[in-house]
Length: 184
Length: 303
Image (cartoon, rainbow over all chains, first blue to last red; front, side, top):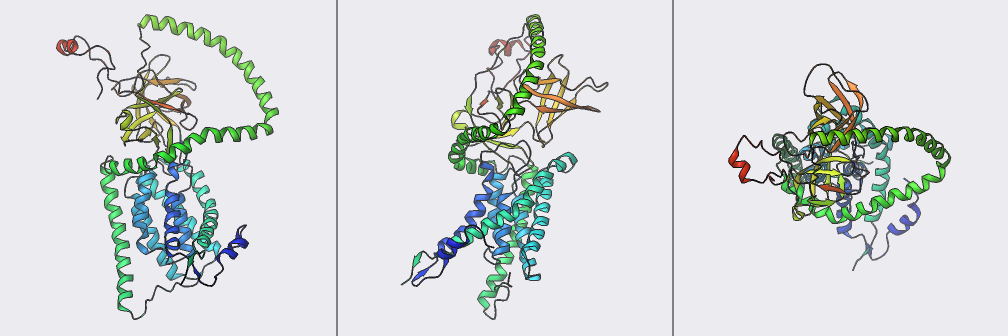
């Protein structure tokens, strides 16, 4: 995916003699980005209706698409737990849904290994819509049809935000592989 | 994407076990999530400690960001102003003409208000705020409507205390941390506020609908007397919320009540005040001993 940062970043990430990416950075940045997305409820937006896309979940999906196998299959457990602390959902809703999503994406990855970005986007859209609707059910909106209608803008925004999240994940993926460590 | 290499770990027994173990942990995690969900759905207060600790930990940065919120809004308003100036002037002139009429009406209403209040001998008692703080965040991705308040038990905020802005009721404190508290907004689906119509005291309940509006449900069934534009204030019945705080204005009448727009948009308010719990004074004749023991001030009994 060529982006505005492609050229300088390619320079940065070019392998060099006696330089290697820091393994700490390479392993920690994906987790940090997802957790940063989960912190979006602490952003200074006081909303009277659900409006923001679930950024942490979008980042997780984008990482699973971009780098299958980078996150272990059980990544949904700690990341979902962290999301639950801030999201306002009943505790456990994130743990369950994120775990199921990670396992499901792992299955999909092995079943259909060759996919394009449009396919990824379609898959992600289905997963995001399912995630938001089921999460709303967990939060106690089961009987409230009005609330499901009120969620429509959020659903649309989340589906539209996925490519942006994927682009950002691609950028961070470049950053985490910058050879900063001196070897030997 | 090319097939990932870690699916078939080869003949290494150790790698096979490790792959197997990660799947076991993943499914155990999903199961754990389901158990947690059942526990927390049955008992809303469960895990409050962890949530409070987490919001305490992020409160300093969130407060700093909230300080920038008003500045940020100003910047955008300034830029937008250049594009919308003409239509803005036209609209303002139209509104001014309307406002002159309304002002005359308001003067009459204020006069009537004064007479009626004198008739009822109502005290305009407004409690001293326990704490004044910013709302530093809200659950903007979830369908539940919680906000995080930048003051906690360290400032004297306690569970159940009503939170209001200058424009009206915002919600009530649900969980407290040391430096932050979680506020249940009145637009949440689980929030129920006893209200009355400001003009004649028709009692009702205001329940949140989760989409930013309120459902007004009348207590007395029968002919629906509501009409668009009716203002509702808290009635104070049942304790908790101080009476006379503005809640919402009816926008649409339904079969058994109305849909109302809350008056205090928590996103537009800079500071909110946390009030002490309201407890109705017991009738003096009902329990003479209690009446002499406790001062008659309604603010005295807290908790």
